[in-house]
Amino acid sequence: AVFQMLVLCICGCLSFAWPSSAKRCFNQRQVDRRAARFIMSIHCFRTAVSDSIHLQRHWDRQSFPCFKLHTAPVSSVQYNNRSLSPWRYREDRIPSKIMVAECLYEGCIINKHEDMEYNSVPVLATFTVLQKTVCPGNPQHYLVTVDSVTFPVACTCVVPR
Figure (cartoon, rainbow, N blue to C red):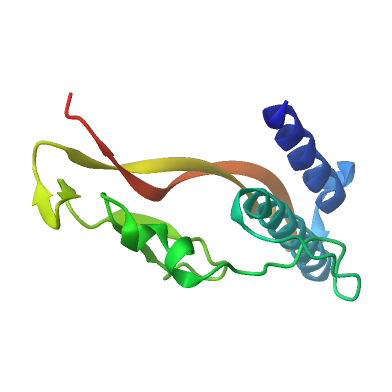
Protein backbone atom coordinates (compact mmCIF):
# COMPACT_ATOMS: atom_id res chain seq x y z
CA ALA A 1 0.00 0.00 0.00
CA VAL A 2 2.81 2.43 0.88
CA PHE A 3 4.70 1.57 -2.32
CA GLN A 4 1.57 2.20 -4.41
CA MET A 5 1.09 5.58 -2.73
CA LEU A 6 4.71 6.51 -3.49
CA VAL A 7 4.31 5.51 -7.15
CA LEU A 8 1.13 7.58 -7.44
CA CYS A 9 2.86 10.52 -5.77
CA ILE A 10 5.84 10.32 -8.16
CA CYS A 11 3.55 10.09 -11.19
CA GLY A 12 1.56 13.05 -9.93
CA CYS A 13 4.73 15.09 -9.42
CA LEU A 14 6.01 14.28 -12.88
CA SER A 15 2.70 14.99 -14.61
CA PHE A 16 2.45 18.33 -12.84
CA ALA A 17 6.02 19.30 -13.59
CA TRP A 18 6.31 17.89 -17.07
CA PRO A 19 3.19 18.03 -19.26
CA SER A 20 2.67 15.64 -22.16
CA SER A 21 4.14 18.14 -24.66
CA ALA A 22 7.66 17.16 -23.53
CA LYS A 23 8.60 15.71 -26.95
CA ARG A 24 8.77 19.09 -28.67
CA CYS A 25 11.63 21.58 -28.56
CA PHE A 26 11.59 24.54 -26.16
CA ASN A 27 13.44 27.85 -25.98
CA GLN A 28 15.67 28.53 -22.96
CA ARG A 29 12.99 30.50 -21.09
CA GLN A 30 10.50 27.63 -21.46
CA VAL A 31 13.13 25.09 -20.36
CA ASP A 32 13.95 27.19 -17.28
CA ARG A 33 10.26 27.48 -16.35
CA ARG A 34 9.64 23.74 -16.72
CA ALA A 35 12.84 22.87 -14.85
CA ALA A 36 11.77 25.10 -11.94
CA ARG A 37 8.39 23.33 -11.74
CA PHE A 38 10.12 19.94 -11.95
CA ILE A 39 12.55 20.80 -9.14
CA MET A 40 9.72 22.13 -6.95
CA SER A 41 7.64 18.98 -7.50
CA ILE A 42 10.58 16.71 -6.63
CA HIS A 43 11.33 18.83 -3.54
CA CYS A 44 7.70 18.50 -2.41
CA PHE A 45 7.78 14.74 -2.96
CA ARG A 46 11.03 14.30 -1.02
CA THR A 47 9.75 16.52 1.78
CA ALA A 48 6.55 14.49 2.03
CA VAL A 49 8.52 11.22 2.15
CA SER A 50 10.95 12.60 4.76
CA ASP A 51 7.97 13.91 6.68
CA SER A 52 6.42 10.47 6.89
CA ILE A 53 9.64 9.13 8.41
CA HIS A 54 10.60 11.63 11.11
CA LEU A 55 9.44 15.19 10.47
CA GLN A 56 6.34 17.24 11.27
CA ARG A 57 4.00 18.36 8.48
CA HIS A 58 3.32 22.01 7.84
CA TRP A 59 1.17 23.32 4.98
CA ASP A 60 2.90 26.30 3.39
CA ARG A 61 0.20 28.08 1.36
CA GLN A 62 2.23 31.21 0.69
CA SER A 63 5.10 29.67 -1.25
CA PHE A 64 3.93 26.37 -2.72
CA PRO A 65 1.37 23.74 -1.72
CA CYS A 66 3.80 21.21 -0.32
CA PHE A 67 5.26 20.34 3.03
CA LYS A 68 7.76 22.57 4.76
CA LEU A 69 10.53 20.85 6.70
CA HIS A 70 10.68 21.19 10.47
CA THR A 71 13.86 19.41 11.42
CA ALA A 72 14.13 17.18 14.43
CA PRO A 73 17.05 17.64 16.83
CA VAL A 74 20.38 17.34 14.99
CA SER A 75 21.51 14.28 16.93
CA SER A 76 18.56 12.23 15.69
CA VAL A 77 18.70 13.35 12.05
CA GLN A 78 22.38 13.02 11.12
CA TYR A 79 22.44 9.28 10.60
CA ASN A 80 25.59 9.59 8.47
CA ASN A 81 27.62 10.43 11.59
CA ARG A 82 25.89 7.96 13.93
CA SER A 83 25.92 4.93 11.62
CA LEU A 84 28.08 1.84 12.11
CA SER A 85 29.03 2.54 8.50
CA PRO A 86 29.47 6.35 8.48
CA TRP A 87 29.45 8.38 5.28
CA ARG A 88 29.76 11.95 4.03
CA TYR A 89 28.10 13.82 1.20
CA ARG A 90 29.86 15.42 -1.76
CA GLU A 91 28.06 18.62 -2.65
CA ASP A 92 30.15 19.63 -5.67
CA ARG A 93 27.53 19.03 -8.36
CA ILE A 94 26.69 22.07 -10.51
CA PRO A 95 24.15 23.42 -11.41
CA SER A 96 21.76 21.23 -9.43
CA LYS A 97 22.67 19.96 -6.01
CA ILE A 98 22.74 16.16 -5.91
CA MET A 99 24.05 14.79 -2.65
CA VAL A 100 26.20 11.69 -3.23
CA ALA A 101 27.33 9.65 -0.24
CA GLU A 102 30.88 8.30 0.14
CA CYS A 103 31.55 5.52 2.64
CA LEU A 104 34.31 6.65 5.02
CA TYR A 105 35.55 3.17 5.98
CA GLU A 106 35.93 -0.24 4.34
CA GLY A 107 34.90 -1.96 7.57
CA CYS A 108 32.22 -1.02 10.09
CA ILE A 109 32.59 0.91 13.32
CA ILE A 110 32.02 -1.51 16.20
CA ASN A 111 32.83 -0.40 19.77
CA LYS A 112 34.45 2.79 18.39
CA HIS A 113 36.93 0.86 16.19
CA GLU A 114 36.87 -0.22 12.56
CA ASP A 115 35.99 -3.91 12.37
CA MET A 116 37.08 -5.54 9.09
CA GLU A 117 34.86 -8.58 9.70
CA TYR A 118 32.07 -6.41 8.25
CA ASN A 119 31.93 -4.26 5.12
CA SER A 120 30.64 -0.74 4.59
CA VAL A 121 28.73 -0.64 1.31
CA PRO A 122 26.82 2.16 -0.43
CA VAL A 123 23.03 2.24 -0.47
CA LEU A 124 21.90 3.14 -4.00
CA ALA A 125 18.82 5.15 -4.96
CA THR A 126 17.43 6.03 -8.36
CA PHE A 127 16.40 9.63 -9.06
CA THR A 128 14.40 11.18 -11.86
CA VAL A 129 16.26 14.00 -13.65
CA LEU A 130 15.77 16.13 -16.73
CA GLN A 131 18.26 15.86 -19.60
CA LYS A 132 18.56 18.87 -21.92
CA THR A 133 19.98 18.45 -25.45
CA VAL A 134 20.14 20.86 -28.38
CA CYS A 135 17.35 20.32 -30.92
CA PRO A 136 18.49 19.01 -34.29
CA GLY A 137 18.24 21.83 -36.82
CA ASN A 138 17.70 24.59 -34.21
CA PRO A 139 20.58 25.33 -31.81
CA GLN A 140 18.44 27.96 -30.00
CA HIS A 141 15.95 25.33 -28.78
CA TYR A 142 16.25 22.25 -26.61
CA LEU A 143 14.71 18.83 -26.32
CA VAL A 144 14.16 17.93 -22.68
CA THR A 145 13.65 14.33 -21.64
CA VAL A 146 12.97 12.64 -18.32
CA ASP A 147 15.72 10.19 -17.33
CA SER A 148 16.76 8.13 -14.30
CA VAL A 149 20.17 8.14 -12.62
CA THR A 150 21.43 6.05 -9.71
CA PHE A 151 23.56 7.49 -6.90
CA PRO A 152 24.80 6.28 -3.51
CA VAL A 153 22.73 8.05 -0.82
CA ALA A 154 24.05 6.41 2.36
CA CYS A 155 26.21 3.54 3.59
CA THR A 156 25.28 0.45 5.53
CA CYS A 157 27.12 -2.32 7.32
CA VAL A 158 26.96 -5.85 5.86
CA VAL A 159 28.48 -9.27 6.44
CA PRO A 160 31.08 -10.03 3.72
CA ARG A 161 30.09 -12.42 0.92
